Image 1 (cartoon, rainbow, N blue to C red):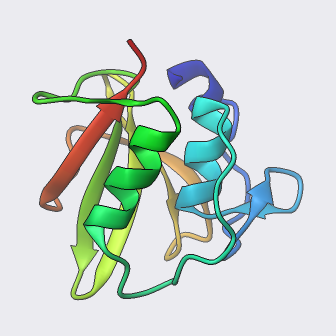
Image 2: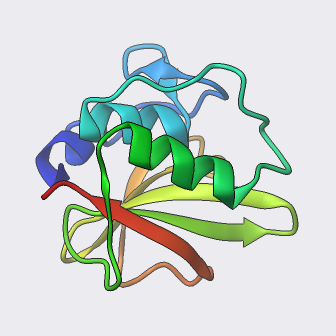
Length: 120
């Protein structure tokens, strides 16, 4: 998962983006990293953590009590804003709307974690 996420580094940010050649959002990045299909009808703001958890379970991802490298983490990046990141061991990969591209950031996400999932 880490290798697949890092393969997307530099892809431009695009809301509802699914292809690194055209752009990715955090859901598109998660889909690429974990090799899963994602719904197209999710909101850009105001999503529900329960819906993300249900989707992760349906995709065969296991809940993690303590997230580590290669795991997908759901964070609250702002009021009413959910965001997905992939932990790498050195930091995390995410689709950064402010920087307009997929980046790897050192350290742990500063945002509150709402859930974590991974492959067994």
